[in-house]
Length: 589
Image (cartoon, rainbow, N blue to C red; front, side):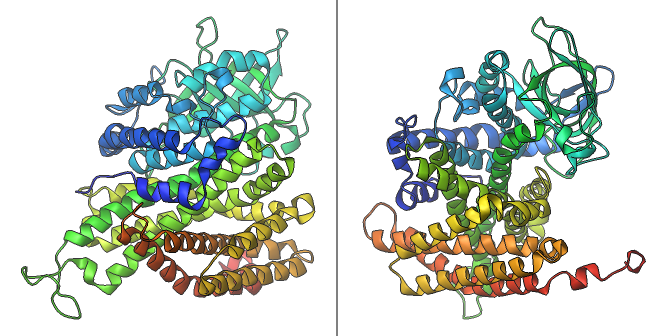
């Protein structure tokens, strides 16, 4: 059975050769993020993922979390508590957090790369610090000094973990329907009462305290999303008293079984307001944006491990002969990698993984530039890119990451369907990523219904300017033509959308998903052309093997072979409009 090996060469190539990410060390606050330091951190992260997280992944899936209805406590699988302790002691929980509260203050991009390794090797474990990171972001930007001083050092060190308590039994996406109440108290605190569901890490045994970030409504607040406030509700109060915030049970899930997904009951639990009254959604989106990028990385990480397993299998599994004659005459059959249909599946995985990695890292680098670059104009343009790319990263990497993992299983035949090979677990674990932190349909609506129109339509203008800037740096004229053609297809679809959506909003709703996929495909095209540009210019320099560079060049060719047909399909889907979708009466389904 193949084990995961962190794809450090591919990561280094994108970071330093393609994106020149070491230039982030020129930004105030990131001076320590030199290439040597980043390489050293990634080496250590690889060891942590391979030697600490990976060995307990399958057992965690088999064993799952256990809930005791009498104590209302949750026990994580064997080895998880010890692995989490190693993770926290290694400083991984606070990699990109503020040094003011004990974090290392390193680039978000570096955390994204480390997240990829963690997701490849143990997605369930990665969920616990992942949710803490969202809580850290929200508290850092919106909380009072008292809450920051009390909770951020513990969350950043990993001594405590955090949650996001948003969803309720009667509402998910439409948070205006929440019923959880917050009653003001004389001491400035609030009593929080209500039930939340699907709360990752809501209760577990790996830390001494859990800080819940809870959406609730104040008395007299507007009965809509404009009446939501955000509160911090700890499991234990400062004096050690148990706060009445209890787990009511665990969800029985398809995957990520070692991640405690809890029903949480708040019974007049003591909490404190984060930010201003009725501004909970604003604070929440601080958590959601970082969480959505991380979820996209989950799709990428799982697909990477599935690719490694299926590629190793395809090189070793002997079945039938090559269509052009024996390639392995010493044995009775050839490795299945010789067969074109297996090649189709393996190649699809490679092309997705490497293109998606470049697109995600490019977005992560812009996140850092939006916060740290000394030039205000650069920060503004970088933020535009982050805003428009966040729903694309979340949706496309989880959709196509899941498909890529499915291709890995399919290429292995019956072996892929068994627990002997772990790919079936990766497929089950990855299915949720297309749903939580906003379903991928919601991501598409966010892109089409909000991001394209923000700031007078500035975000797509910035996006096209960036794409054209990258195309202008290419040397391969064929790749330039491919990229320009895909940009043109995207622009034509946007023009159709602009002409029709203003007349009927259902046209925008119908076009949202294929439009997002067109954006993703176009972005991937420019990323692949850029990687091929670098590989071609560096070939022979000895930094990587010739096979490494040739693999990049041939993968780019394969991407462009299939990209235009996909783009044409998505464009036709956009322009097909709502008519056949909305034609059915309810009783005709």
